[in-house]
Length: 159
Length: 399
Image 1 (cartoon, rainbow over the protein chains, first blue to last red):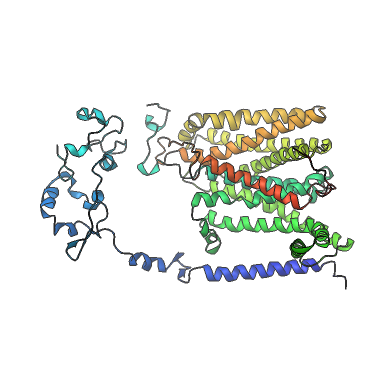
Image 2 (image 1 turned 120 degrees about the vertical axis):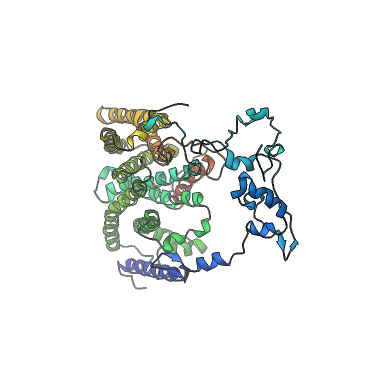
């Protein structure tokens, strides 16, 4: 067998690297999304994809049709600027064609939902009602089991 | 509540609600740490390959294989941190120059390719021997690794040597670029006062060299001890002097940086000072700048300057190396986690709590960190790493 040239392995190495480079470029061409916008650097299809998702939130207007009485109470009270769904969760699948298809869930067995907004922080306005997680029980001498909603209706929280 | 002399005598823990969590965790601490070990080990290997420092000949290949073993896992912590590891390839797809991190994929991979080619050129002789000896599937494996060329002659050996030198030559600036780049990734984040200094790439690079050399010293000592063979004390001495000098340079940069920031009394010093004297007091003042720096300078200084020989030299070297390996680890922690402890309000500090079993906890970090050593062990089962001591002829030690 003819002895290979002393540089033959470099030629083969260059070949391997060349092939690897072509494979890389090919993969790159395939894997970069076809809608990639090189001017603005984002995937063009992402907008359509996001727009195509079904809505999870119905908005307050969708609640009024059935819950007018609650809405009347709510819209006069301090929580009037909140969305129903900030406490009740996403409700787009609660009613379909005027018929209730799923229950609206709400955690009414703990305080976390109230503390989501009312937990004390230095950077909140002073006149905003705030409660420290640790010292909250000093408020009206609560015990650990006592819930905020025992005294405050979430729809009209004025004491 | 404790007051630390912040602007307007503000309180500690004055943090914004969306700033309560230290997002870059211990994974991001070990990412630059492992990357640094790669750069340090490579520089050590190039001492012989490029600069012809004869004393380092016995460990030149060892340091190269170790650099490769660490290199294999340098980016793994990032995958664990980000989640969605199946999307790993996306970093190569659409990197943008406005994102330092996105360019890292190319900087890192190109370096790893260079390392692989250098190891291949240096070990080609071994691959060819194996291909000619082996039978069956293993023969195919070695044959592919030789790219089908199974003859080795003095002329090709000469070309290989020249090419290896060339690769090591361009490898040094590349290794410096790789780890300087990691420092750049942090140093260019102007939103974090403790990171944003142009000196950051140099500090990262010099500490990388220190940690790499120190780690190589400990690995060398351990492997030689396991093999029950003699230590090359001439080389050990040179090793220690190199490490000592590298660390003096590194420590000087670190001290200069903090002196500069402190003397300038710039806008951010009001929050950096209480950070260093408060949450980072143990890890920065006592650890990084104190015991773990002054200790090695003293210990390695004694070993370098005095006429210390044999085992005592080895013990001092290992003590100094251990402290330096830890020094660089806490330095990475102080930079990565420490920088994020400054609240975005610059009026207080966020808390950081170590986790153990969590997704980015200490257990995961330790496991990832052990992997390069396992990889090194596996590679060492296949190719002889220390010259003249083929693994096949090595007597098996029972433990």
